[in-house]
Amino acid sequence: VVKLLASCDRRSLTGRRDYAILLLLARLGLRAGEVAAIRLEDLDWRGGELLVRGKGNRHERLPLPVDVGTALVAYLRWRPRSDCRAVFLCVRAPLGPVSAGVVSQIVRAACTRAGLERVGAHRLRHTAATGMLRAGSSLPEIAQVLRHQRLDTTAQYSRVDRQALRALARPWPGSAR
Image (cartoon, rainbow, N blue to C red):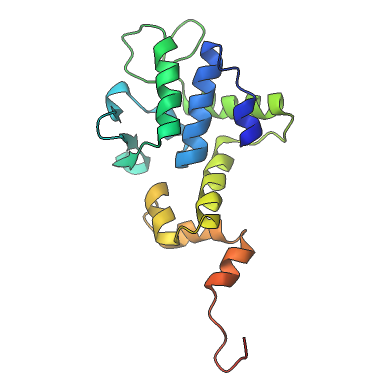
């Protein structure tokens, strides 16, 4: 993630946009379609929240971390004037909202610039989940951030972190631990 973020030239409009998109994916675990769907009115600067337009037409609020908010402001100051209410716009004419596919292309292009294996936007959602798990967040907390309706969906992210799972595992009855 550090390499992906560093690959963005934040002196340019494209770099600022891509940096903000990558941060939303990596820090909040948003899906590509959720990033593409963010509208200007979804940003609650005073409350420090972001309205996420998720799967199944669900709308949920998430806290807006300071670093993500700072990246969004840096982009929005350079964002071309447009009647379009989408936060993220294509940088070439015709100026319109980015799609989920464009968000995934941004991730793949950042991978190429950073010299990394090309992955899709969903890999950053997975990275966000495993990062929260390693930082000590519980599965219900991670499920809340990722907006999973079922805990077993979130539990899939815990499979890769065997060390964290060992700490959660209870000893087998009658065994010496």
